[in-house]
Length: 510
Image (cartoon, rainbow, N blue to C red; front, side, top):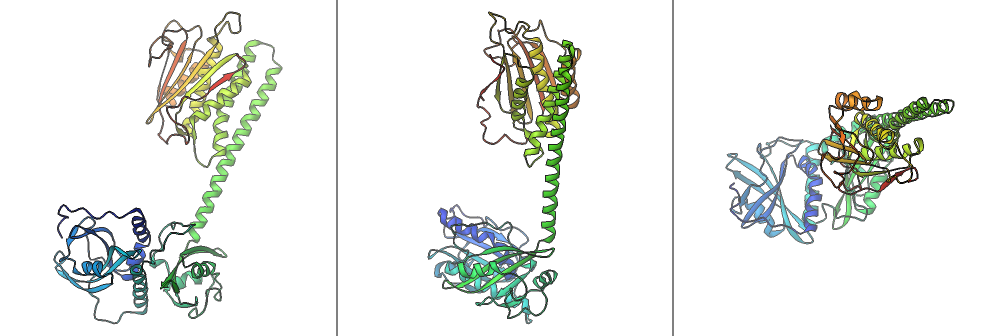
């Protein structure tokens, strides 16, 4: 079949697109029931274009290569053309030159509101000269009933007020039960029988209701009453059976139903294990946070019994470092994930400093930094804590004196892919030139070690007028610290515009 000669395929309206998407949800089931390759043809100029293709799991495909996007003339696909023009199911044999063999074809017009919008072609090698078994006959009969519903426009089912998309499409190999118009079992596949046996349903099921066999059939009753597909999970002891029910309709009346069964016991057990593991991890984070808070409280009590100013300051700094780590565990204990919003960490550290220092300093926090894994967030929390604390300790020796300008500290976060830029700038007395943080006090030594050794980043500390990134404040006094680290890009926090300047936060009075 040659490629489409310039003619563009007809683009259906949105409702038609939705109809075809709904057909694709059960595309695999139809292929399994027919034991055939399914091709979906749409009109393209004077011929037809293959829009979708699916291969069966119950039989061998006849098309090794993908035919999606291939165009055929009406003469090359006469059954497809006839089904499109007549609106009826057409059957016959077709010689396919690419295969150098005959193919058995059933062309089913896909109808939406009385209009043919596509043709579903079931194509397979001619059946062998033998009597098919019961399973094969039942499957093909079900396919025939669904094909007639497709032609009538009742399948796929129209959207409802509480429409849903199946978690994953059912497959025939999981297990199938065919019910008659009264909801009694006409046929149960071997895999369906095995699944029911594991659930404790034994004995002859034919001509009985599922409820009589010990399996609740709420989903079946709903499907018969609403004429819409339904699903339900039925737990019988440790066994969990997932039911997907498709009602079979003739002129809007239910004449039976197909029930797909799948034993999902192992999947549900894994789900419970994951939920239990997640709850355990969050509980551990919560306990670590509580333990850190207890240590912090004990240090505060100890600090009240100390009279030496240097010792008091050392205790306060230790409390602040513990609080910075505690912030990370507080966020981890609240969320069902192992990463945190970096800006939330910085904002919480600023709030904690107000409680510990009481300094009359305004701190401005701007920018966003996305999310980071916990093993990266913890050192970053300590880094920003130490840099702000360093500014509070050294930048404002005359804090509170009359005539002094408002003391300010700016914390700016900027994320570009995996690279995080964090700047802490103050308008204090400043420094004479660039300084080596590794040769500074304890706080800067901690920062230098975490940035360079643990996170593999860089840090520069120097006068504010050194134009690292420029800005209106470049010529003003003060100190600027710039940290650049690589952080795995886990996405921006929801609800925050990365370019939005975030609200001013205050420390103390000011």
